[in-house]
Image 1: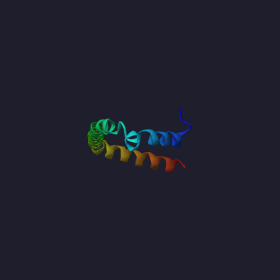
Image 2: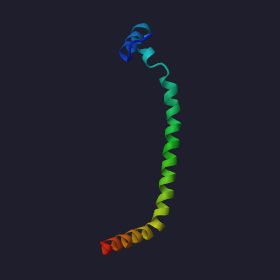
Image 3: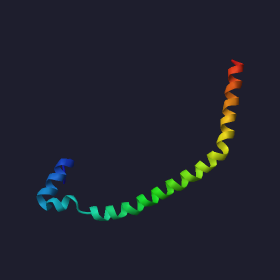
Image 4: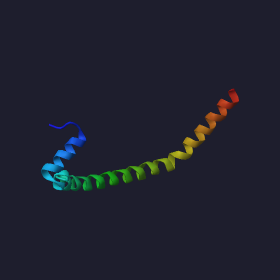
Length: 76
């Protein structure tokens, strides 16, 4: 069949031309557009959701970590 990727490209180019190299690109692009949009939407939703959580819990977490650090320094 093929002896590596360069041989595959060469044989495809000689038998089918440029069209053979890009066959199937349009359906792949059509698939990536909604998939990318969904990924973007999910990331934005999760980022907003977790930022809201961090805004309320972040101060408490920061004070706990500062207290724990001062306790460790006192023990040392």
